[in-house]
Length: 274
Image (tube, rainbow, N blue to C red; front, side, top):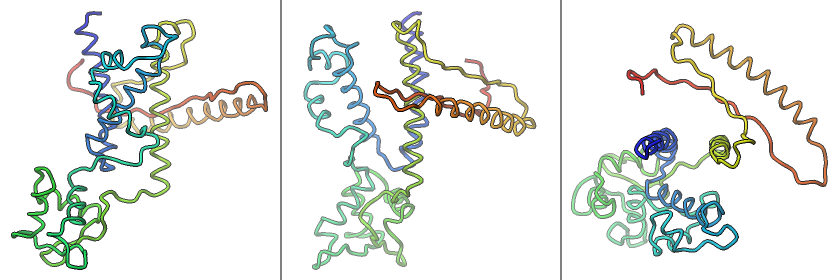
């Protein structure tokens, strides 16, 4: 396979993987810079820890080698390695709306004598517009206001804007946190299997991974297809769960997490063949 075809295939895969992730990130108010730093940290952890990318697998990885592999400068490597890993991250780079809230809570121009955030008119010398102009980094007043209203950080009092709370994101409930954890587990497990199977050294020990789909299902047959897939998959998963439960014995030996993930596929048929 030529390098151009390889890059095209990898870029297609990247778009398919990153597009749904970007939807989840934007839906949960994660700005690009935060996601970018997460990806950089993962790149660096992989380059430092994975023996596959060392010149000598038995020797410690060097920063020079990592810089060459990742394309990141040594200065950037030092900065990113100080960031908490994504699984335990508690700090995020603020997006534009969050910077506005921070300015509103710390800039004396927008505080009363008692350090209470002023209720701001939409326009004027000291207004919500001037606050956005100062702190948003180029976003429009309307877009920032709409964002803050949506997450209920501010409210309209007549034609003025009142700060309700200083944080930007909606407080996630337990179900949302559980679902996000499940999304990460499901996506990560599938990609781990694909990466394992892509390793030439595992060619004789490939993990089970199959995909079944048909691109010519009439819309009127969609519900019948859904019901059949659910019914047959439930039967299979119950049988697998029963067997794995029987095999889960107390033991002093090393244990493995083993299982099978399933997911439903539905996409609009493209107009052109790839």
